[in-house]
Every structure is written in C-alpha cells, then in structure tokens.
Image 1: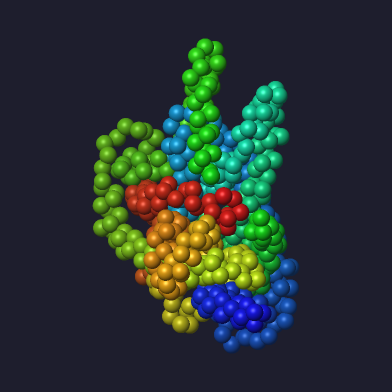
Image 2 (image 1 turned 180 degrees about the vertical axis):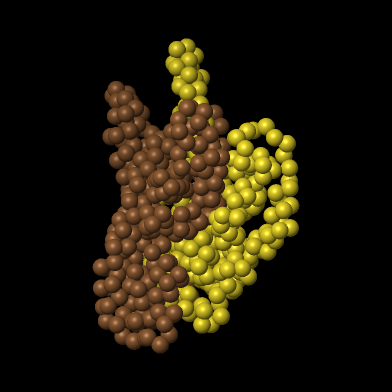
Length: 296
Length: 295
C-alpha cells in the first residue's frame, strides 16, 4: 500500500518534471547566463574600444562607478521619476476608479477611452507628447496657454524631467485605473449600503470602506509599476536623450550610455548589477505578497 | 459568481429608478453630473490619441498650424509613410516577431501550466514564484551580456533574435495566466476523460484546450500586446533589418524627422490593432499583469 503510493508519486513527479522541463530550463538559462556574465564583466577591465586592455579588475569598476557623480545623479533622477509617477498614478487611479465605478451614460465607452493610453507603444506616446502636445510654438498646450493669455512653456528645455514624468504618468495612470476598477468590483455593496443607512457621507464611505478594500490592489499596483518604472528607457531615448546635461538620465539610460555609446563593458555591467540589486529590493516584497495570495 | 454579483448590483440599481418623485429627480441630476464629469475626464485622457489620429489626416502645413478641427482630410501622409519609409517592412517585422514569440511561448507554457494545475507537487508553488521572480530582473541589468552574445552568434538585428528575447520575456506571464485559467476548470471533466481512456495528449488536445480556449486566447493576446509595444530590446538589438514598429517610430525623433502628419499617420497605423486587442482583453489582462493577485 505504502509502496504503491510512493511509486505513484514518483511517476506523477516524473511526468510533472518532463512537462515542466522546457519552460523551467529555458527560463533558468535566460536568467542565470546573462546574470552571471554581468557579474563577471563587472569585475573585468573590458572596453570594446581598447581590445588589448583586458583583465581582472577587482572592484575597480564599482569604485569608479560609485565615485562618479553621474551615478548619483542618475539614481536621484530614477527615484524622482518613480516617486512622482507613482504618486500621480496611484492617487489619480484611485479617484478615477471611484468615478468610473458610478453608473452614468456611456460609462463603458468612457472607460475604454480612459484606459487606452496603456496600449500605446512608448515611442509613440513620447513623440506625440513631445511634438504635438508640448512643442513650445505649435503644440496644443502652447496654444491653450496663449488663448488663456499665459506665456507658452518650452517644456523640454525648462522642465525636462517634469515633461518625462507627465508622459510616463499618462501611460501608467490607465494601468492603475484598470487594476483598481477590477478590485472595486468585489466591494461588498451591502456594506456600503449599510454605512449609507447609518448616515455615512460619500467621503466617509471612501476613506473607511473603499480605501481599506483597495489596500491590497493598490500595493500590487505600486510594486508592479515600480519594477517597470525603475528602468524606463524608450521615453527618454526618443525625447531628451538623457539631457540637457544629465537632467533626465536615469539609471537605465546611464547604463545604456556606458555600454552602447562608450563601449565600456565593465562599467556598464557594474551599473547593471546596481540596477538588479535595486529592482530586487522591490521584487522581494512583491513575490512575498503574491505567495501569500497563492495560499488563500 | 462575479456575474451573479454584477447582475444583482444592476438589479439593485434599477429599483430606485422605478420610484417616482424627488428621489428620482435627485438621482437623475446626479447621473447627469456624473455623465458630464466622466466623459470630460475620459476625453482629456484620450485627447492625445484623438489628436494624433486627426493629425494623420492633415497636411504637414496644417499639422503645425494653430489647432483646428476644420480641415479637408487627406490620405497623403499615409501614402508617403509607405512609399518613403517602407512602413510595411517594419509592420511585418512587428507581426512576425510578436505573433511568433507568442506562439512559441504558448507552446512551451501549456505543458508547464498543465502540470502545475493538474499534477501539483510540493515544488509547484515554489516554481511559480521563481518564474515570477525572473520577471523582476531588469532588462537593462542584462543588456551588456545579451548584446555581446547576440553579436557573437550573429543574432543582432535579426527577427529570430528578437523573437527569442520576447518569448523568454513573456514566458513567466504566459505560464501564470494559463495556470490561473487551467485551475478554474473543474477537475471532474478531465477525470471523466481519463475514465474513458484518454491519454495525456488526448486529454490536453480534446478536453483542456477546447474548454479553456477563451483563456488561452486572451493570454495570447496579452503576450502579443506586450511584445508589440516592447521598446527596450527592440531599440537596442535591432537597427534596420529587423526593426519593429517601436524602433521605426523612434526614428522620427531625429530633428530632420519632425514631420508631424507623417509621424501621426505612422503612429496611428502602429497602435490601431493593439488598441483593439487591448479593448477586447482588458478584463483578463488584469489577471496576467498582476500574476493573479487581483481578480
């Protein structure tokens, strides 16, 4: 009896193993090979422009990296970008989710319009905003400011990082809205009704019922956005190229400059390791949360 | 369960409407305000896309003139985008790479998700979480090795190379999403099939796939959307031969490429199919994007 059970489990285990083997082994390779190479390169003196000068460098690359003001500026830019976009999308997304949860005429279509920016490829949204919205002479915003009697703003030269933040927030606000709207649908109507009967106003209901209900969905939004926002690249690439100066160079863009413009493989890899460590701090929390959800 | 709830919700919502008198008036004026507010907000958010579509039908001179809704629409920009820049070459790259990588990812993921949903072991949960964690590796962290590897084996600027990257990039999400769909399937159905003597392959082919087809389709659509819009690897690993639309549109960022009508026409064509896909799958997408943490 015992024997058949254990052998049954082994057969099942073998079958599971063979079914999972392709996905697991491919993902393992995809993760471990580049990761190991990045760590290895980060300890090497390796510049594609100087083929002769290779060799073990120890922690030299990290030393250069951490004493380079560009790194700290890039980390600062990254944090500002992530922080502001998160603030805008989470607060805005929650308010929008409440709005689009109410019943009104044509709500379905209005919802679809509001989530659309999320499906626009990043290079398109960045260029549309940069040219047709934010252009200092011919953009819609300049025209709007002028018709209100205000001076037109040269967005990308006077407020470069703010401009990037606006574009990225426009792309991710619909994401927050989509997730929070879904979470909102499991809100207990009886509870809301009961609170209303007890004389709770809409603001009290929002803070004491809706917001606590959305707590988990909001933290999921924050963590998933963080992972993507930490390495925003295309929006910067097509609008400011990291400038003026280093004003919009985030960590991802700095690594790109070091790797594919300076060809400094060692330095870029050291930067890559820093990016991986940063992302993993966030990832640990997200994985834990999903794990808790798997159990329930 | 959810549909039942929505039904009861709308039923409850319709009760006050039936009652006449002040309450009805108050409700309808509230509804009116909500309608105005909701549509204004949606309009502001959607405006850049609307404006882009409009500009695509203008001439270059009209595109940079003061904003106006009155103009005689022309298809010139669309024609020029094709004749000058060979738009369809890039569009074809996008189609091949995103559908190819999605198909590959589904082929690899279906057996894996099947095993996790129907033959779970002690390690299943750990495997799932590990797959999720591979998604946390920032692409920029591994840009250097991937670039050098691709250069050495001749995969730079090839569709094959980009397809491989996108397949692996989306594999964790595809496995997760399929897993949540498979798990929702009542176990008895597959059990019954096994009683009738179906092998694993027949079970998957004749029972599992047809029954979960909507789920598989929306998983595939999400993978297509994510690959279609991907703009880190496409910008760094391709130049002209294999460049998909994300990289082609980026070429408009150069100063001499500031032709707004053409940019708009090309952009409209590039996002239209994906916008429709997105609208179709918005509900199921939440599952995939949050790894089942929000349903």
